Structures are given as structure tokens and as C-alpha cells.
Amino acid sequence: MTVATTSRPAELMAALRRVTGDEKHEPAALSTLDVLWVLYDRVLRVDPTWPDDPDRDRFLLSKGHGPAAYYAVLATKGFFPGDWLDDLAGPDSRLGHHPDRLLIPGVEISSGSLGHGLGLAVGTALGLRAQGLTASHVYVLVGDAELDEGSNHEAIAYAGATGLDNLTAIVVDNDSATHGWPGGVASRLEVNGWAAATVDGRDHDEIARALLHRASPRPHVVVARVEPKS
Image (cartoon, rainbow, N blue to C red; front, side):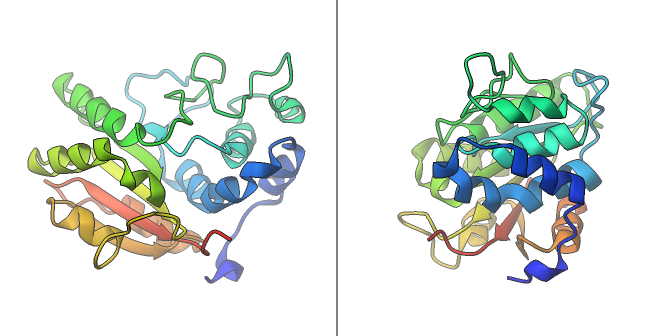
């Protein structure tokens, strides 16, 4: 991995250091950090002063366990005050070990029970299409191990069959899947009609180029390879 090519800002790293109390899930959080930063810094059309704008892009964090990196990015981008980070999962904290959409501005889904986000993203993309909100795009971040879950087979097949081109999935691949897939994660979605790209999950420029590419009329997946889970 070309970790040296990243450009994590100092304020993001300072925010991440403030989030303590979930060391068990630190590898899960750090695996997503660079993808999350690129999404919020270069890709997503979201406004922290109006997080419920109906014309916004939607970002769904399916990989909701270990959300420290997600919280650090949201705080750095102004969705909530930075001092919230000092009390992860405390008795008066809004920041739980799994993100809660009712408590945290900018969070689209409550997540942490793995395997649900991709199906929710397909439904969200369909709903936006039905409402004529054609400028809004749906992004969902999943872990490679989540793709072992059966509901994702259906979501992948349905999105490809219906040409759901307002949907982009980002798979953070740290070799933690039980079964894997012949030819890698990207090939699994390509055979179901998706356009696919595989990138270095630590290289911000590679990630941004892949996310901003659209392959109408097909859904798009970006596989972000990071160091294997130890």
C-alpha cells in the first residue's frame, strides 16, 4: 500500500486521536479512514448546515462497527462540535459504538449489524429515482466480509439488472471475507452488470478518480484495497 501518498489533514488526525474507548474496533475504523475523507472532502454533495437537504447525495455507512473514523470526519467537516468526540459511548454521549441516525447530524442510517447497508442503499436509490431526484447520488461503504451475507447477493443482482446508475458501492477490502470470490471482489459485481474499479485504499487521488467516474446506465463499485486485517 502506498500510504505515503495520502494527504490526511492535521485537523482530521487530531479529531481521530480524540476518539477513545473503542480500541477493539480500531482496525475497522482505520481501514475506512481514507475512503471516508475523500468522500466528504472531494465527492459528496452534502452541507453540514443543512444535512437534510432533499437534493443532497446520500452516504450510507454499512460498515458501522468501529465508527471512530466516521465520527472524526463528520466532526472535522462541521456536522457536529468537536468536543462530542471526547465522550464516545458515555452515558450522555450521542456517539455510540454504532452510529445512530436519530442522534447524529449527517448520519443517514443506524448501522453496525453488518450486511444490511447495501440493500438499504438500493432501496434509497430506487426511492430517489421514483421521486425524480436525478441529481442525488447514493454511496454506500461496506466491508468485504459483509459480502458473505446472503441479502447482499440479492441487492447486487437487483441493482445490476435494473441499471441503478445513481448507486455507487465502496468495498473496503482487507482480506477478511470468509469465502472470497474468484477473481476478486470486483469480478463478483461485474458479472451482475456493475461497472467496477479497484484502487489502493490509501491513495486519495486514485480513490477520488474512481468515485467520480460514472458508467451509465450501470451501478458502480469501487474496491478499495487496504492492508490485510491482522
